[in-house]
Length: 71
Image 1: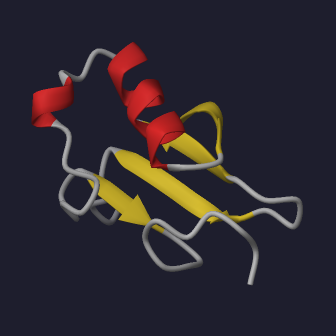
Image 2 (image 1 turned 180 degrees about the horizontal axis):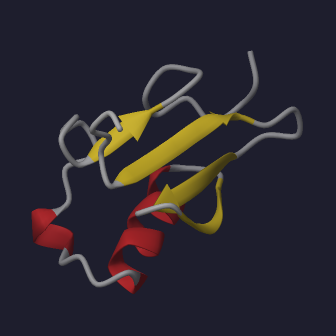
């Protein structure tokens, strides 16, 4: 099995927002970076340790990083 980042931000949904999974568990639909950081905080990550642009931590799938609306 290929390695993957523990946090995956999936492609933007047609209605806006992106599904977020942490270690394979769906944690919610984020509509912006603030939502995403809140999901990570609730999962136990300290905000000081969160880097949304670190590919070892966060994998952005199906769209650019920080893009929340469907293209």
